[in-house]
Structures are given as structure tokens and as C-alpha cells.
Image 1 (tube, rainbow, N blue to C red):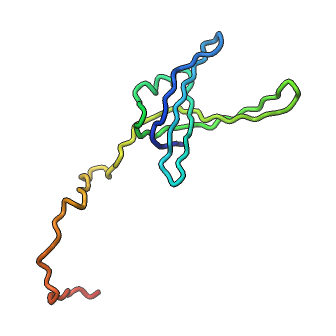
Image 2 (cartoon, rainbow, N blue to C red):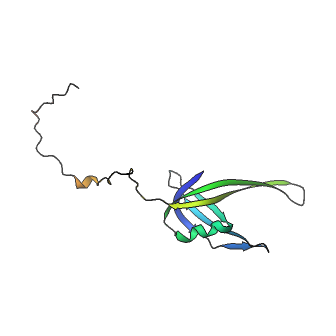
Length: 125
């Protein structure tokens, strides 16, 4: 699965416990009718993948959904979900098809002023 959007926040690497477990979080804002702020966590050696990215950059993150069950001391079962990233890449604002030149803006074209209403098309449709 993938999440795509603009980087809103990149957290610092956090280390937990005696075993040195590392986690780093990034928040990406999707670009849709109702933008969502999606928090994705990178763990262990994947935390270093975020070093080359900055706030405001357009990115695509490959993710896995993780879920776990936990029973609290009162015996109640709780469920937790997390979104874990394993790859991140920059996305260009406007991508053109491979091998195709970029399309110039509409302002780059001059309007045609030599049209003659009496010229008829000889096309059959």
C-alpha cells in the first residue's frame, strides 16, 4: 500500500528500552477533497530513510498496516493499529510521460487570427 502527499512534520528519532528499539514518525497531508493528516512510523534502520526529506516536500511512502491485541490488567481486550513505512521517495509536482517533453502552459500559444468563416471543411463529419 502507499500514502502520497506533502510532508507536514518529521519527528526526531526516539529510542526505547534496553534493546535500543528506534522509531521515527512523519506526518503526510494527502491532497484530496478532504485532506487527511496521516502519521507513518519508521522503525529500526528505516528511521534513517527520513534524513533526506523535509517539510513541504511531496512524497510517496510504501506502508504496511500493523495491528495488535492487548489485554489490560482489568482483563479488557484492546486493539491498536499502526501504519509502518518501509520506503519513501520524492514525487515531482508534475510528472510527464517518459520520453515526452513537458507540456507548455496555455499562455505560450498565440491565438489564431487568420480564420475565414467562409472556408469550409471537406471532412465528412
